[in-house]
Length: 267
Image (cartoon, rainbow, N blue to C red; front, side, top):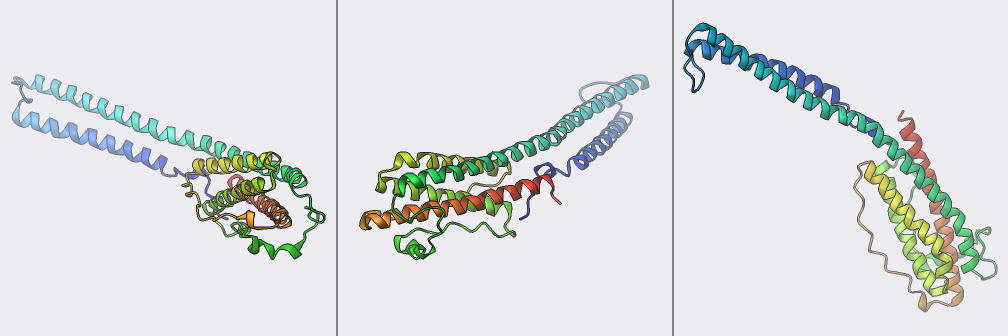
């Protein structure tokens, strides 16, 4: 996974500053030389009648000083803008690192809340988080539970990883809302739902700080239609969804940890 540190987003700052300095110096000297040649040739300044070489020299010096002062003003202004970019880069990098760490904390909180939600909503014997119950995986497609985006590839860019995290969290939020209504355990699912939504918002904040465009909301999820399933199947749907959310959140945490490590040590 390749990550670009925000502090390296303005490598051309010093080159820009040097360019504007050289440009201002050359422009100042060129303008003063051209003005001097015009006054010496024509002996006048627009709108003025010049008499005597001394007046011409004085006017030439005054205009040259004015040009130099003006160019120095613009140089200082450009330097200020460049330095602002330089000093803002570390600040933005610190904010991004903090945002990623906050997202990791929210992911850990979700993992802690999943067990309580599972115990409260899934009451059928044998459906526990400690038991993998892989024999029930065939019901994922039968019930209509979509698989979340894959996060395990180390070749994913930061932009792709964050986009998939947001899409996966949106998916599980919708799944849990439907399950809460079907099982009448919306209150018990509130901590997990709130955690998923908070994590999604925090990941979008990471995208904003990293100057990565946020993906559009995925509206293609048709819903589970749990009304046509038996009570046991609804229990299984809740079990499989929470188990899938746990696995996905673990991948989210590892991905965020990798992003954080990449920002700390870009090499």
